[in-house]
Amino acid sequence: MRSITLPDGRTVPALGLGTWYMGESAGAHDGEVRALQTGIDLGMTLIDTAEMYADGGAEEVVCDAVRGRRDQVFIVSKVLPYKASRKGTIAACEDSLRRLGTDHIDLYLLHWPGSHPLAETVAAFEALQADGKIGGYGVSNFDVAEMIAWEKVAGAGACQTDQVLYNLSRRGIEWDLLPWARERKMPIMAYSPLEQGRLADRTLRSIAEKHGATAMQVALSWVLRNPSVIAIPKASNPVHVQANRAALDLGLDAEDLRVLDDSFPPPRRKQALDVL
Image 1 (spheres, rainbow, N blue to C red):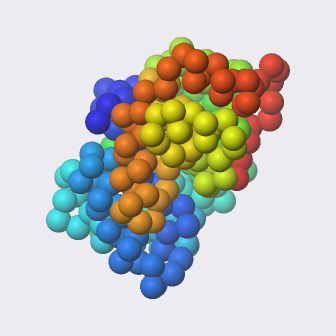
Image 2: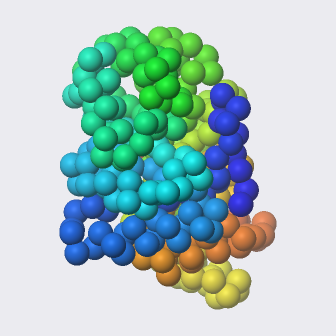
């Protein structure tokens, strides 16, 4: 498993596990747990979740998936913006810790920019870190302007990642956010790297046939080509998890990348940050 280094020196796998939409159905719970456990077995030991996902239900799925092997995984969770005051952030983190069944969250993110002063959220993150309840902190769905404002409050190097929507059809961050983060040696964490399974055009299928792979594997391999991007696709069954892991070993060549650029052009100007 290829690893990526965070600004604080910790390393995480380049390919992790997403949990958006998990925890919404009791009948799906055991299968979701098995999917996450399969990923852990394959080295995809970064698990991304959030209090928002199924109103905490996804965190409970993660709890069951990592029981007895907490020291093997790197858990990422998020606080909702409307809770992100100093006291609210700490209370939200305590609730997430309880649902996750752990005494610490490895990386805690502000889910998107909100109305609470950034100084309050940062102060809460720092207090949680000092108490050993989070290992580090960062943000999600922040564009360059918001990142600059965050850095002014938190200081350089404090933000461990910016988790944003990034895939072949959503390349806007390549114009400015990705270079900005790269200059600071801060990896980007790409959510919905497969556009929730909707990427399957003729070009992807043609490249997939060439490599004996699937269109989704090509799309994921494209995201993983970047050494400063962490991908966190969600897969609810072990077969899909195994397919995602295989994408890490799929080497796209220069011609593949050229063809994909023709079908999914990179940005030619600043674009608004895509969100789902």
